[in-house]
Image 1 (cartoon, rainbow, N blue to C red):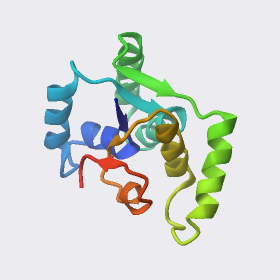
Image 2: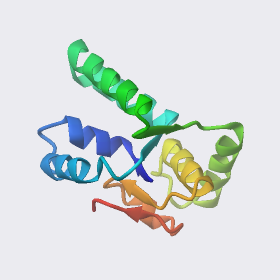
Image 3: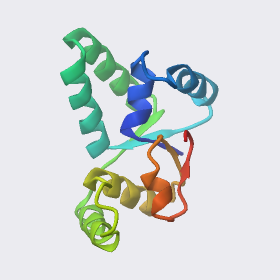
Image 4: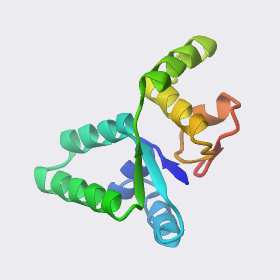
Length: 139
């Protein structure tokens, strides 16, 4: 399984993103053989971002693609539970020197740790800085 951070979907959707073609290639090469996952918090972030930056038709197309990907079991939503939430608070306290790591990133780390997921489709170096064994696929 590969976790998709907000940046992964943003880079896939935004043709102006510098790694857009690399991400398209990555998805086309890995779509059949990989289950991708995302948390409800990260999905909320990307839907909000698309709502603010793109028009309704592009948002609708994205939402349809998400529903389709879930129904064919290519995208798995990992829900942030009460346990993940409090684990994320503990991580936020533990990494007090890393104030720029968002709470959503800590929820992602928690859900990845609990599900044994090491690979994350992101450019975000925070996942390396915490030294929890995550493999950032795009640096």
